[in-house]
Image 1 (cartoon, rainbow, N blue to C red):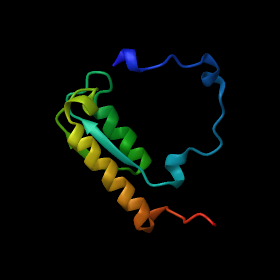
Image 2: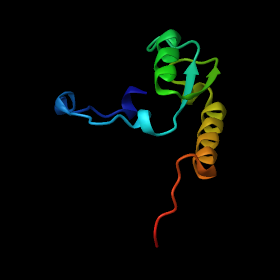
Image 3: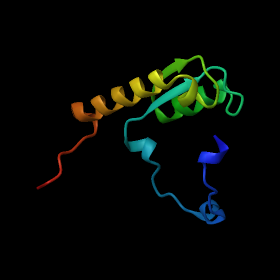
Image 4: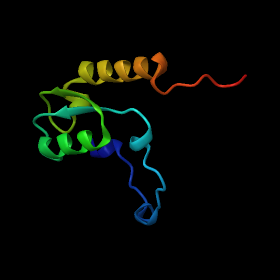
Length: 93
């Protein structure tokens, strides 16, 4: 996993966010119940704060490796929800 991640710039620490996307847009959260990097209790708190649709699966921090079907299913659910009118707007052509 570390080999696939790129270093992030320290300048990111100084960035300012005027309106977090999670306050205005729908979100989905996959809680990995065996995550040692982000404890499930913290994941629950973050997803609740964002008002996310939550799915829990048994898995580690690298849940996309251990549970790829669950990750794909949640992505498909989120895409269908957005396309279904929750937050999707057709572009003007």
